[in-house]
Length: 536
Image (cartoon, rainbow, N blue to C red):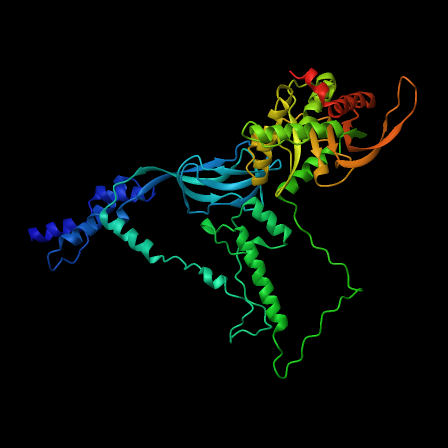
């Protein structure tokens, strides 16, 4: 009888243990109430064990999984999207590098966002497990609001070995899906199997969500009109490479050629060639504006409030052309400063603009609008000491405007070196937010693409912009008159000319001011030797 009571007590949890277990499960029943309930239930008749319980059975009841809380306590940490640019209130999620349930370490990439004409990669500030993504790819994320939740491990609890083994079995039971072999994708699509008709469309795997790819690859897919989500990536973590894009195109071509070249089976009527119906209605397709194009859309919409006026002039680059040739020959011999091998015309023009700003600082200012709540408030003109000149650049992601800072304190060679650095980062999509902030005036060199004349649009928070056309070689008359004798003599010479187009905010800049400033730029470019006298 004594042994039977001992066994019964061993198989039955104590009132204290049960109360703790129930409390751990989140119930509000107090420990005393549970103890009383157990005491009353123990009065009932229970069948006695007929054999001695094994130690393993005792441990199962004593350390059962149902009497323990979770193995790890975790705190959900909302990650807030930080301010990554001047005046930016929202960013577009380009792509996610993680999914819910993924383990991330400190500085692991979380997502890529598009803000103010720049693509920025957001990294994790701590290690943990991703629990929730607040936005989908293509949606706009608000600055200062959470965009992802991460569980942070705080404390490891003592977990019985039986529970650990049980968890291992559960994880092993979840067999991951087998990846598609690369050789299956690389098979020629134009060779149909017996089960597939030669004229039937080749089944292709559908990929959902956004694909991992660099901005250059995305630009390539847009140029080739390829849906990048349909391309199987062979890079790291399924990243789509340029080779994958070209392979995808070859597969499409081989599939199309097989469909057209395969002979018709007996009894089949060949399909009639497609005929363009001139009376067919117009087809329209709505495509959402996103990425860099969306940022440009917003910026140019705000620029509509600025009253523009245009001033254009023709600039003779002949002397600068000759000077540049001599400088590049010298750089080729000495190796330059290690960062550039030759210099373009643009650094000279940028320096000329800075010299004009020294005499006409209104072109380097910004307008501060009057307060809408204060009737007595008046608009202000805020002058800025540094010449932070933005340079419009054409990149695979679209138009962006990185900034060369403090041009008034730089040499032409320093400007050229910084220009090379910004161009390299812009082409690879790795410009930092600091490279795109604080511009005071913009220079747009559209001439390297084409076009002689242009009407540039002023960027918000600026009052002027310079547009540079294409450099052309034209015939011109040179005056070789003899001043002593007064004999007139003209000859035809070769000139290198370019058109400069200035736009200014007519609310604060008048035509005479802009014309005088443009004349300084013209003198610096046409007579670059005069630049030496004004260098600091």
